[in-house]
Image (tube, rainbow, N blue to C red; front, side, top):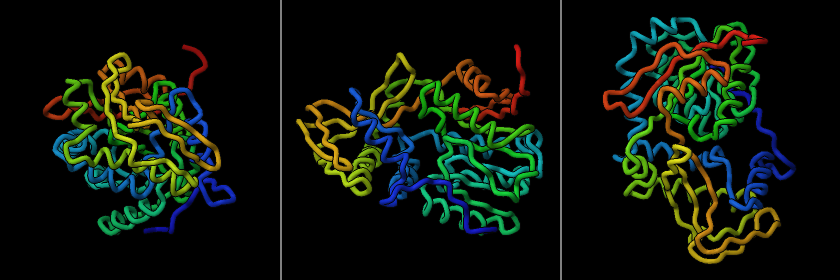
Length: 327
């Protein structure tokens, strides 16, 4: 690995991520309690998500891998060699070698908010590609990120697999795509995964698996709040719920109170009535038109779109749109 890594996470006087504390306290004070999905991914949450990708019901990872394995020649032709690959929310980077092996990149920059998990994954990937410079960056990729100086002059390819873009409502997704456009710069490309609309029963099963791993992933957020923010949330009195919201074309994950609850977080008191929920994640599903509309609004022009053999999942290659002051 080329360097120990950079960190752009702002901590408060207690050593806690300031944005995490703010998001949790503001979210729990809302009428519909909610915490942004990115806070599901501490080190424990990141590992639980990797476990989710192996359960039979969770098809997106297998479908996306199929595309990455079957479209190697397309990637080589349309992306070409010599780019710095910047992966947003890299996690364990298990899909990344399939892309790197196809396009002969000049460098790899994984960005993730879970620092220990990020560095371990970066070291593992650097061992698989010993000639490739790897520059891990611990950062909240929801904001523009200053990339390492070593890749400043290289053309960039953003890599955003897994349909993480679906975790965001439309305005936030557009803001993120614009932020990526700012981070990657003119002449850059983006390879992004987006899940597709399908039978709600298939979708609900993917987010409420029979082994209960997704439930543990969701409940881990409450445990993290207790651990890092001095919380007293009674985790054993919450249950994981996955719902299909047809109006918004999304799966929603919630933590539902099984009885009336009172608890504290960072010295502030909160209460939940039985049946009340904390909304923890959205996973929006798309068709081609909604995918392209989102990308264009975020400053990216679609170039190519690939589906897996079951038409369940898509990867889209887009290029940074030219900056214009008028239509």
